[in-house]
Structures are given as structure tokens and as C-alpha cells.
Image 1 (cartoon, helix red, strand yellow):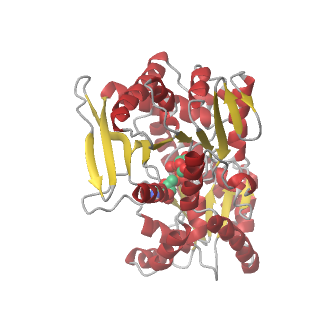
Image 2: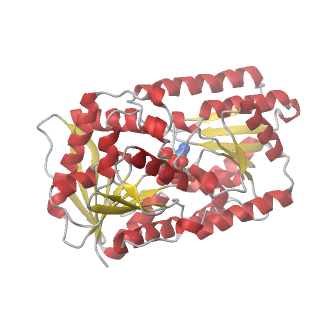
Image 3: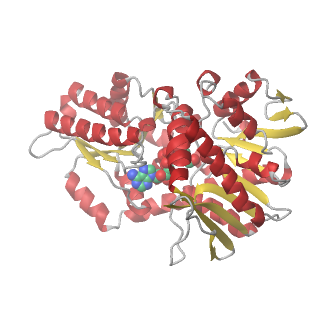
Length: 467
Ligand code: ADQ
């Protein structure tokens, strides 16, 4: 088996006790790296003045090497906060209105990708497989090819690929598209994303297509497929079962005092549809006064990317909105929305999912959305809660037994909340079984194996017929 090199913007380095930060993706990639022996390279999260970037920081844990590089303050501003998070992220989530394109940021993005390539180059062995992750690093393979790398290189995009009319509005779309053709295997979350990518490529005359998944550009050919990312289904289910014993779980049950728990869990991000969700919840409570005082929405939303202005504005907007609803509808002994700005550890999260009667997962656009999958895995078979899921999350392609909604339709979503809370046990169980089947059939380990299988052989994987 060839050695594996993973490159991503940030690296989940195990702490001093040797425990890796939890999370399905980290667990799956770490187990693939352990099986093959390998290296994970990325940004350390530290920045320094222009001439202060030192050598790579190397750490070793079992048979995995971690290579961390600092970036300069200017790199972080232009590459990370600039082009990656203020151009690519909004455009891939259909928010052209929020894209702040600037040539300086664009040049910084390509410069940092060149820098990553030069840091990686001396570490690459002849037969190594290289797997690059996400929108921060799209041009990395093209940079490596320019520096003579012939290894097989794969790329997985965790976020959506938008429709051509949206993507092609981005200046430098040609450079971004062309640099993707330097990979051997391109992975997308859904068929829809792959088709959007193919439409962009063909519309720009940058390549030709021999079948659904095979493309040729000049002398190069590559595969583009969809590999829907999963979670560690069985492990997460066990975590949720065990969570009922914890003191947090007991305190939470006590504080609910018999009220039904509705849960929302998202990073604070405009793509997650949090304001539309609160509007829908308010609409539901207003139209169903009997439900007031009987349910509570717990919205767990750690702050993210606070240095990007759109995120800072959103933090204020959501807090104000939750406060307004609580002020208007709450009573001395009932708060409709509990809004928490912190990240919970996975066992606590698993327990809360299991306690909830309903999860509201209503992104306006999402590559996959693992919260939806975790919620399903955490439910008890005897009395499962209901998943209300946006049609615009990649997860909706697999979780067809969820209650699917259009999050832009606030009244429709409010009606779906009412329907979900009243759903009979038999229907809840039928839906849950259908969703669990999908999650067991494609967990994060099989996602990883299928991608790496395609990358190492160049042949087709198993997902074409799954969804
Ligand atoms: P994210 O946008 O970060 O990821 P998501 O898939 O929903 O979104 O969550 C990733 C992980 O973060 C999950 O394991 C979840 O439990 C955790 N998380 C979210 N909110 C949390 C909270 N309040 N406390 C603790 N943990 C929390 C990007 C894409 C997604 C895609 C993933 C993986 O935007 O569409 O599903 O990558 O490919």
C-alpha cells in the first residue's frame, strides 16, 4: 500500500495525551494514515510578521507525521480571511452579494498555495498518494505539477460547487477551474455538485467528457465523482447511548421540566439559515399558541471566523433576534429559545441530540451537513426524534426519510415543525430506520476507503448507484 499524504488548511494534531480532537473526518483520515503510514500537512493556525516564518514544525504520533507551517500576517489576511472566506466560500454557497473580490487577495491565495507546495515538495516520496482537502487549496496540485510532481493527487471539496451562472461570475474562474484539472481524482459531496462542476468546465471549453465521470483536458485525463461524506455511525450511536448517564444530561432533563426539546447545532455562519430558522420557530409558536410553554429551542452556535466582517455582523443579528423572540413570547418561567455561543464536546452533543424530539437543520446551502447525520445516529430505536432537513443540504440526497423543507419558506417550515412534533411513533420509527440504513451503508470510513481506492487505482468507486 502506498504511503498517504493529506493536506488541509488546518490539521487536527493529537494533544499531549495522544488523543486526536474528536470529529468523524479527523478520525477517518487518521485511521487511513495509520493503516498506510503517512503525513498530514497544513497551517499551524499561527501567524507572524513577513520575515518570521520558520521551518516546518514536525510532530509524530504512532506512525503519522504532522507537519505544521506558520503563515505571515499578510498571508492569513489575503489567503484565509480574504480569497478563501470572502470569495470562494460565499460564491460556493450562492452568496454572490457577499463576495468581496480583490486582486490582492486573489494573488495572496495563489501565493500561499505556491508556498504550501514548496513546503510539501521535499517530503513527497515517489509512490506517495496525495489527498488535498477543500476550497483553501484548490491550486495546490497545479503548483506541485509545475514543480515536477508526478504522483497521483486527489482533491475533495467539502462545500457545494455552484451552478455555472454563479461560479462563472467570479473573476479568475478560469484559473480555478484549470487548476482543478491537475488532479487525478476530484471528489464532490453530491452528484449535483459534480454536474455543476462539469457544466462549468464544458461551458468554458476547458475540457471534454467521455462519460459521466471521465474528463480529458489536453494530454491529461481525470475522474470527477461524488463521494458523500459520512460520520462514524456506530461509534456515534454508542456515544449517544452512554450520554444518558452523564450529569449534564440529567441537569438538562431537569431544567426542561417536561418540555419538549428542539435542537439546532451549527457554526455561526450565514449559510446555515439560522435567522430563517428562528423566524420559522417564532411563526410556529405564534400560529400554535397551545405549543407555547411546551417546547424549547436550544440553538448551539459557536462563533466562527469572527475576524471576517460578515460573521461579526451576523453574531449581533442572531443574538438580537433570539432576544426579541424571547422578549415577545417568553414568560417568567419559560424561555422559548436558549441561545448558546459555545462549542460542546461530542459526548455532550450526542446526549442532547438523543434527548431532542426534533432537530432543525435548515441551511440555505450546505455541502453535506454532518449535524443531520449525527442527530439521526444518536436517536433511540424505540422512540426516535424527527429530523427536519433543508433540501439544500447535501445530506438531503441520502436522508430522503427526513422531513424535507425549503428554508426560504418560513411559513412552510413552521408548518413542518408542527407536523414533526405531532408525528406518530410508527412513522417516526419508519423514517428513522430508512435514514439509519443510509448512514450504516456509507459511514466516514467507507467514504475514505472509496476515495482512496479510486485514487490508488484510478478506477471507479461504488457510489455511482448509491443515491
Ligand atoms: P461545517 O460547515 O463545519 O463543515 P457540518 O458538517 O454541519 O458543517 O459540521 C461539521 C462538524 O462540526 C460536525 O461534526 C458537528 O458536530 C460539529 N459542530 C457543529 N456545530 C457544533 C457545535 N455547536 N458544537 C460542537 N460541534 C459542532 C464543512 C461543510 C459541510 C460538510 C463538512 C464535512 O460546510 O457541508 O458536511 O465540512 O465535509
